Image (cartoon, rainbow, N blue to C red; front, side, top):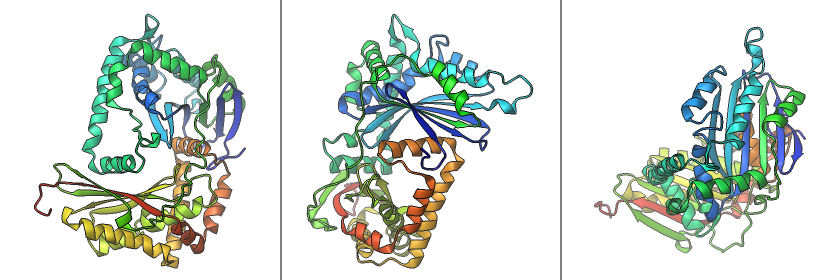
Length: 442
């Protein structure tokens, strides 16, 4: 099936492994991106968050990070990495190889280059460096400390921290509020043995997607991937189906601040960080999704948006003001940096922008600028092989798989009336304000 953004060809390799290939001469490098999926749950999150760095410490034949780097240099500067990705309530361990296409090397210099790259990627995945049949104790201890510092450091980015705390307050006890990095309190009980056992379990049983983008042929990829990346698996598990998660019973709150949740947190900061969280009732798989994208674009997704123009530029109440979607669960967040004394005025003016859209106060210029912005964003993603993989993966996890022409047609067809209809179902849930209570303004 042709998928969003590309002519990706997909096939099921069995035992929970799916292969997706895009043949293109657009890029000089070939990208291989592997996603190993897990449900985002408290009992798994920290182990999953720790695995990328432990795995990247070395392999069976290349036991140190230096050995890995040296070998990759010998592959004409190939890059290899591991990371973690969160999409709704799906937590994915990501392995990524980018390697020069052999046709750009003279003569026979590139013979077998792609195969060698896949070989070392395969080692990282299923032949990591072990000591006594488990992960290296030294590596695990070191990477636990690194992960602890990363989690502790989340508080240093105040805007991101406020957004994270708003999500936690909106969805207390809900798995979606978990950090992709995991939790500090879980690190103490993780060791080289139980982490390795956990990894072996998800490697055998959890769903895996393999993407290959580059100047390759389907037959070549199928043969090389089957040799390097397909290994004995049982494929017993599935991850959470994200479709339909956005639906909720209306609380009758609408955009009434007095009926919504309001949370204040004090820190030693100069600029207040206000994040307002809303429930939209629309997720990626829903037919109203493209109208919701328009709504977000008109509200705060672009420089022509109401938040930017009216709250930041005209009223000068915010250093920044924008909106974004957590599309898997149909959540919308507005983030702004404001003077603490302007909290009430800023919050009220922000809500006036949502009320305006709800009342149909949308100009033709706002509709067309948003349409162009969404189309440009969608089409620009094809300029990055990594973006092609991530976007397709996100849509598949959210049970939406369609051609690029359909997506562009859907954006072209969105009407003002559809945007207004979406606006009717949006409710303010939580306002989170990060402030300094010791300042005189209070």
